[in-house]
Every structure is written in C-alpha cells, then in structure tokens.
Image 1 (tube, rainbow, N blue to C red):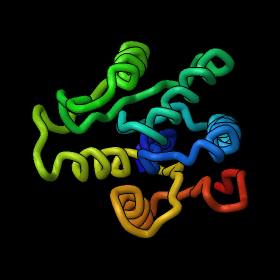
Image 2 (cartoon, rainbow, N blue to C red):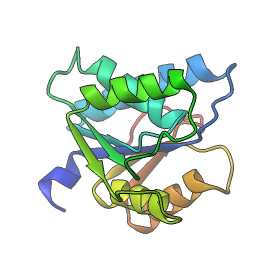
Image 3 (cartoon, rainbow, N blue to C red):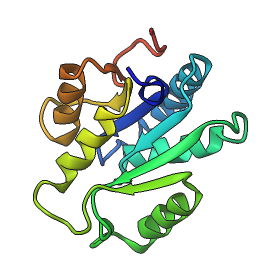
Length: 166
C-alpha cells in the first residue's frame, strides 16, 4: 500500500441526519477522527454532499486548529453539484471548498454515474472509511460495501463501538 493511501481516510454517510442525533454523531465523529489522527492519518477526504459529508468536512476543519498537519481533501462529483440546493447550504459548501487543502472533481458535469465515480475515488485512495450508515440501501451502503470489497477498514459511527481499531 502506498504511503499516501496508508495515511488517508474517507467519509461516507447519509444526506439526512436526524436532528435529535446530530450532536451525538458530531461528538463521536470528532472522537473517531482524533483517534485516526493519533494513529497517523493525515489526509481526510469527503465528497461535499449535504448531511454527513458536510459534517465530516466541518469537523476536520475544526480539528485542523489542534492538528495543523491534517488536510481536508474534497472529492467532488461535478462542478455544478450544488444545483437545486438552498442558499445557506451553498454558502457553507463554498466556505468549506475555500478552506479545503485540495479540491478534486471526478467529472466536469453531472452524469448518471458521477456520484459513484466520486465515491469509488474516495475509497480507492483510502485505507480507512468512516461512515454513518443506518440503512442497507443507497449510496452510503454501496460505498461501504465497495470499501469492504477493497479491503479498506470501515468504521460505522452508527454502531456502538466508537474507537478506531487499526
């Protein structure tokens, strides 16, 4: 495994996070990312979607104050990803994009497969995948299964154990 991949973690999760679970998920996400940092992870890739991707990016940016050597990498499916989003969500997306250490687009424009292409890119360049997975269908479930098939360690925040094991 190449050195970059060994030190890279990606995120995948649902676009809708129940408001009553948000604070707990955010707390556990921070704990797990800090654990990963202490185990040598430096690069954190997220797909820029609403919900969990945004929360993961925000958390990495917060932790950069304490761990200035970590890097946020946005792997975006297309240039016009925010089409149809609310203005507040677009503003936060643009704030995160401006603060990211690197931005990668897997496609120039939206296509039927661009989200899967983005998700595979995130997994293919990581050795750890932190997810928030509560249902067995959809893009998050697909990405978590893909990560497992590629022998990427998958840590699901929706499970009870909240420490990174490897």
